[in-house]
Amino acid sequence: MKVGNALSISKAVWRRPVARFLTSLCILGILLGSMPLKDLWITVKYVSPSLWAFVVLAFILGHCVGVAKWRLFINMGQSKLPYLVAFRCYFAGLFANLFLPSVAGGDVIRASLAIQCKAEKEAVIFGTVLDRFLDTSSLGIIILVGAFHSPGSLAAEGRAILVSLFIAMIIFFLCLFVFLVLPVPGFVSMRVREMIGGTRIIIKRLIKSPERAFAGLALALFIQGAFVLLNAHLGKACKIDLPLHVWFLAWPLAKLSAMLPISLGGLGVREMALAVFLGRFGVPISNAVGVGLLWETVIAAAGGVGGIFYFFLIAKNKRPEPDPIIIKTIPPVRKEIS
Image 1 (cartoon, rainbow, N blue to C red):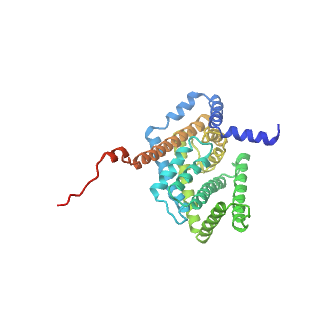
Image 2: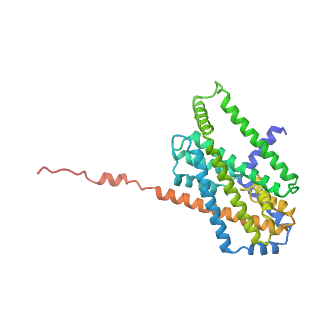
Image 3: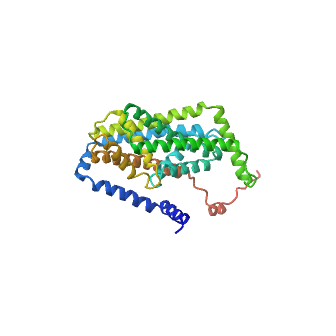
């Protein structure tokens, strides 16, 4: 079999939700089979319903800040998307992440919905890409902070992830530079040329006002840092006694690992990564996997709230149109001459 055919078959398999679901199921099966389920159940029971509800609420509030961050970039065009509309599109993407291979799928969903809501296409596409880039970069910064406070604790896997992230950042800036400098080839259609021209205008506006990018990075650091604190709080409830800087190292590494498009929304991959990274600090696998599964329920609950909110607004905005048959049966009003 040729290499090209093998790659195309592999891509086709990973695009199917069933394959991703089976991958998550296999990873979870391996994890659950390597620990006493009784210990896992005891770990999960440590977290009270009130604490879990608090974490879900804080997670949703963190993504409310994420909506404001996203709007910083998608509103760089002429048309502005109101916060409530952006909230609906953003949380619809959060809901879609439950069924897609990575966060990129949710980004596509929210960007598509924003464009349907009359937002400027070029600004939405570029703003969504930049928003994801800043989120990922903030994770790298948090990992470096955690590694600085725990020298020697960054294992080979963590260094490989950081190197990959650094290379991705370089590629992003090189592509951005090439996109701005090189002329558009003549064979490109007029529609694509207009879209490229519009995107270049958006990028130049961002370069002229870099404070927007710095504000976005600050918000990304705030959101991701808050999520680390929430996981550390869950870990403390699950009897994981670790310094805070270890969580600033382990949790972002696990989140970056979960971005690989091989599972259903990172399910299984995140838990395995947490078990590996926290295991280096003497955390039992049942405790690490328990925290990971609890975080999965938080993500699912917040995504469900986002889906309910999105479909509720759709139903609310649908106004019944008058029945044409009834209109025809109503006799016209005649003015009588007095």
